[in-house]
Amino acid sequence: MKKRIVIILMLGTIGIMGLQGRLKILGDRLVSPVGQKKTLEEIKLVDQSIKNLVLPKKDTGVGETKIIYVTPTMYDDGKPWGVSEQIGDVSWRIKVGMDAEMATAGEIFEALNEYRRNKGSSVLTWDEKLANYALERAEYFVSSGELDEHKGFVKFLEEEDGFNKLGFTWLGENASIGYRLNGVHLIEWVYAGDEPHDKNQLDNKWAYVGVGVKGTANCLIFGTGKF
Image (cartoon, rainbow, N blue to C red):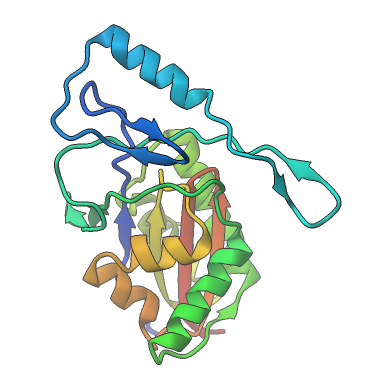
């Protein structure tokens, strides 16, 4: 039985605070001042005001209320928002706004299937083995602080009997780190932002998926040919 790795892609983040064009707070929106330069002391003041920004309390609907803290990590580099840029053979980045909370694995799964329905693709079935491995990958990204260009994924499949451990003959990966987004925005902004990632998440070749989330790191492992 032939086993294949299919379209393994990654999205990095551009959420790195530079020394110019730091975000300003305008009401409840974050606005990046294009072309403005600041001294280091001015930047520290802006940073502290951002870190201390607290949005109104949110009713969770389960008899409790929590305060949502917002710590933006975007910067203005003069490039357009919402446009993916290829920065490596399998790596892309995109500038988008941040949501107040990071999506759960279940929310990303639901958003993915809804997006596939809307685009005429088949609905994927959740697989626990894929999900457990996706979580391992997300945890690794957090511990290392970056993506790994799929090296760990390829090594697992080719050198650690990954196909048999997961129980699929075809496997693929989409992963990103640094974007604090709800499920819809992650799927429809980040992963739909460039053609390769979008094709991968819409591909009717896939029948199963597992999602793992740790911090802002997330991983989607796609599979078909389950055995």
